[in-house]
Amino acid sequence: MEITSPGTCDGKTQFLYHIIASALVDVDSQNLVIMIDCDASFSTRRLVQVLYQSLRSSMNPGDAADLDLKVEDALQHIHIFSPQSMQSLIETIKQLPEYLFNQSLHKSMNRKAHSIIIDSATAFYWRDRQDCDIVKAMAGPNSNYDQPNYLTLKVVLYSLAKQLHCPIIYTTSNMFGLKIPTESIRELAPSLPRSWHTFPDLRLLVQRRTAHSLPPTTSADEAIRDSKERPEVIAKAMFKITINEYGKEDWSDRIREMLNNVGGIDVQMKITNEYTILV
Image (cartoon, rainbow, N blue to C red):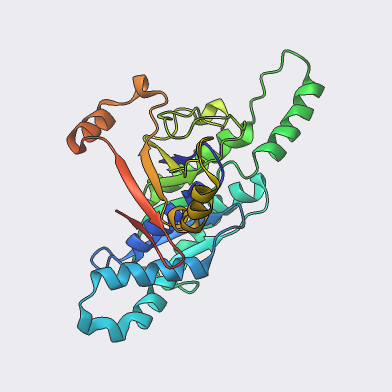
């Protein structure tokens, strides 16, 4: 599953916190989560906040005394890796089975993998593209050299997901800085190389609902009154999660049937200093 957005700070990583917390507090499933933090932006502190909120919403009031222990236990089963380059990312994924199947290294040996999460798959895009452009220039104008590291990454990811029987979830950024009216966007072309265009079974768009600017006819008194209320309005602004309809003509019958059964996806996400929830 690919999670993307037209701009920055649109809530992609916050959505990941919600996914991770939901997986780790699911006591019936006994999950582990593999988190590959390529952007060096993952916050354990933020995850703890979301875990507390997820547990409070699912626990009986009488179980509140166990809250700290449950959060501490959940944190034992998220495995965070921070590669610094494309090659480091590929090697990290290759070595994950050796790590996961070594019970002396962690406490998740008897748990099933919920997901492999990468935030973000575009973190090393420009550095990798620069290296490839140099190779292409040396190989000549007829060279067909489309960032083969991304093809290798896709192959090792697919192999790992098949071995662990779990999905791959990754975020991407809009690498080309397209100016898009975010209120109306329903599709966004992938930023990754062509080898990834058919990789995800499902693409999601995460967008911040914008706070509209004041009309030109606004009086000074109205502007002053609005300035007092606007911070609260912005703080309560919702984020929207929808299907990215790019390439929908190539969707598999399984995906079409799933979306028809659920009536599509159009979810609101609320982000505050204390929690991230879907509403």
